[in-house]
Image (cartoon, rainbow, N blue to C red; front, side, top):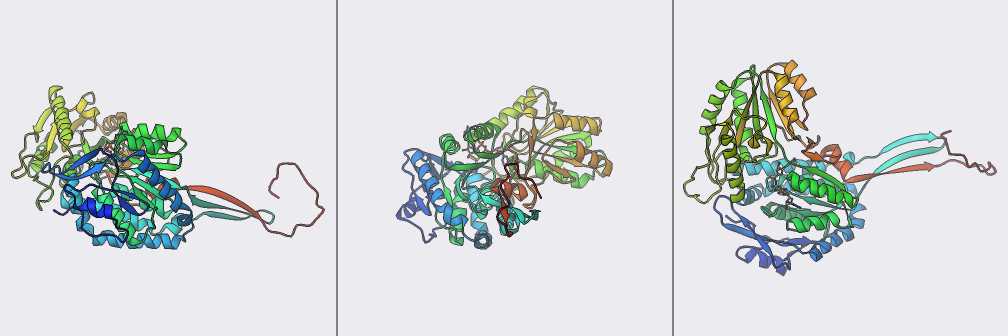
Length: 520
Ligand code: NAD
């Protein structure tokens, strides 16, 4: 499949034309409105997880190139921040239209680089598109406050101003949605941005950046650099970057939070998950089974909202038998196959790690109800496929429970009461999301009140909140204090200026007072 359309923005350069026609194509950086080849001698292969074909190569961007990207963003900031907010919003209106126009191209790129099914890839784009739509209302979202006559002839008002240059560091699992959680909100608030996509699937970010340019985003407002740990460390240390948005694993996220904060930056860090679903005996059977299968195995379990652990209250045998039946009916195939329910996992290393965690579960006493480890997909024998796998009788001390598996593996546990099930969830180190399935309002309300998780689902699997709310997280799943998108997202990308003005006739000769001014 064609990965990048051979369509050039007006800013297209000789370097850009060369990367597209190289085999495999080399992914350029985007600096100051130009797609430029990195001077790095080191490139990483971007690999199609269904076939092992090298889709493209991504550079380990040099520190000088990062400096150039930050400098372009810094230079673009003064005129961008003073561009009327209505104009900034209109660029988002145009961007959402262009994303819709190129939805299929974006989805195909995601399926090729990340592996998820085309339908799922469209969902990935669509959930990001909703954030762009939300950013179209930034004038209202960014409104300040005004109190008239706080003292005689004096008014006070607050203005939410952009910070300057902000940066975003992305994971592999949502190549479109997560970059779109970041830069549309940041730039519409008046900031300029440096994006570091995942080195495993940078293509969607590149297409989105082309669309942003086509939509009218001025040069230097959005820049893209590629790489891994070194470029991320350089972003954390850079003196001109004011804020970092991070989504990914705990190892990277806590490191970036500590290193970025030590340099005085704002950091919002969304990290790992072990999401639990509690199934009460009174739950609607069909809807609950569908929800567990979809949220456990969708995207091959590589969603931060995957429901990877089910706690059955009051007996699990009936539920497990039904789950096995439904999981067996799922079709594992290349994401490009229209009938595929789940595609491959991202890499050979990820597959090995998932298989090792399944084995560790078996060795510590869990029962393997279905084993997807040896699946072979005809025509895609080299793909990193794992079929739906269910481990039952899992206990909280097992490694397969303590670790985030991030694969199509559903873990089943048991509890005698809602209280006991809730304690299991709350003792887990992660707090990304948790769901309950029940027809009892009393149980649901107790769960909602007492559960320690950012996203709470009641008769739905872990929801990704729509962008007028925020994507949250508690315990080890989040570091920082302002969440992604929603009101909190606008607050993250802005700082408050409080202005006090006095307009009244000031009689002369009233004398000077050195006492602390107080409201009169
Ligand atoms: P990852 O942490 O390996 O990579 C994320 C980003 O950090 C990449 O851009 C990578 O280059 C960089 N990075 C990785 N290790 C680094 C290091 N040691 N130092 C500096 N930078 C580093 O994560 P991933 O495997 O791409 O994504 C999967 C993880 O993301 C899972 O844990 C998943 O739960 C989490 N996730 C969380 C959310 C959420 O909102 N909570 C959403 C999506 C994914």
